[in-house]
Length: 239
Ligand code: ATP
Image (cartoon, rainbow, N blue to C red; front, side):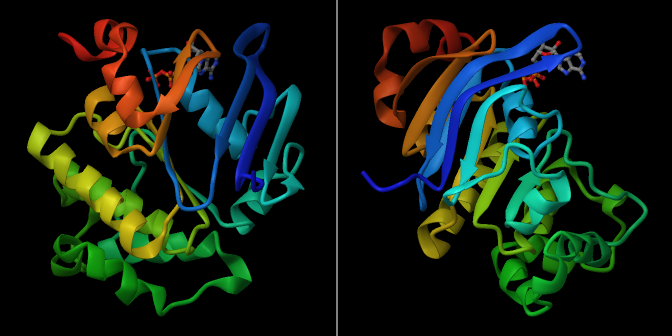
């Protein structure tokens, strides 16, 4: 089997004396959408942040494109074109949409391509219409679009998306998932998606993992996991 683009091997992460990740193994191949689902506090965000180098893994290895990035500083990890759209979006409320997007170029450093703006905006006509508007005046769904668009500005090889549907009405969340699917289909974008909205996330995913208490407990295709009784009981029915 070809080397995965991202390989997480036996990773443990601590907050002080609390072990939040307990030996996580996970792969993301080029061109895949891989989803990680799990309850509140399972450690999903911690894994995403550990991939970005903060907090740092205490044990195990994180390999990106054949290179061990476990001990790299976060800005060097970003330079490898791993882009993150964090939980809570963290857009700059007083800056315009355009300025927020330009911040996304900073991560790319010397490789920044200003021409990327038009390509990104083609996926987000709503943002194009609001290009001069302040980020803080956008709706929740538009702010989520802006967070994703900003991450795309550095032409990521791997896009990490943390809870993009959080706090959004179902139709708006669906629109966000549709955009992610289209980015993957038309641009071959590789996506690692962390979600509590298990149904949509599993439908979207080529492959998926379930995390419980800092450990991966199940893996399979998104479709397989959707059908598993344990997944249905814990994450789909009434939740
Ligand atoms: P959520 O969906 O709520 O974001 P999650 O699956 O992403 O949940 P994490 O946020 O990664 O879970 O949290 C994993 C565990 O680590 C939880 O027990 C949480 O309380 C703890 N934790 C997270 N951040 C910190 C921190 N900065 N300091 C101490 N403990 C933390």
